[in-house]
Image 1: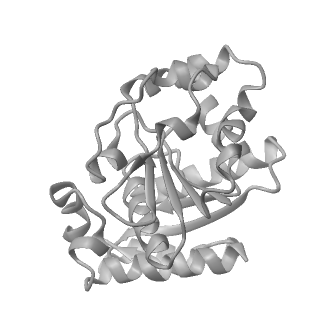
Image 2: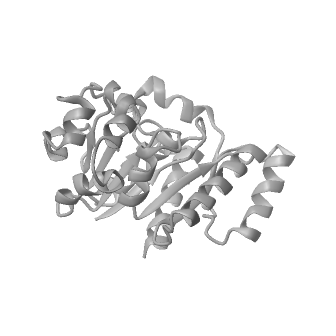
Length: 247
């Protein structure tokens, strides 16, 4: 089982779209995939047409009164299951803070699912918090969507610095560019320069496209309603590159 987290400190960069589309693509290749929606906004849960409600809420989950496996819901897509979000997840930081070994809590919750899934994809809220630290200790790799702008690159530098500070050398970072508009000079320049200092960068870019925004209307992954679009093809290529990097 590989645990991958779609994560960025900054919001609005395509984390949820990446988690949902990559889960769909992975399942199409025959993998068994679980998406865990840790964001109280519940966007991934919305895309998969599942009610954003967890019995016992975040408190039941963190306290151990509820097993993560008991919360899994099937989706409309073969091979893709979901642990839905719950609005109580907005308090996960406080709940984790009250627990011993809080940074290891998420890893402990995921461990019993090791034989059930090939990949677990965590859709994470945009923050640097106790929840984030728990994600870092649970994940094998962070899939980090970046918009090709100066501020987005700055947040990636902050993430790198935090990983070094916390001595998380085994946590793989897989940054890639999202919402790319190659008509913009800044986008082209940043994309061309970034790999010079970041050998870990993925080479696949997700284009800025209105069809990605339509996911909210269709409530479905791109591959389900627009499989022949450039964006859908880019996510397929991105997944193949991620799997290759993971070995």
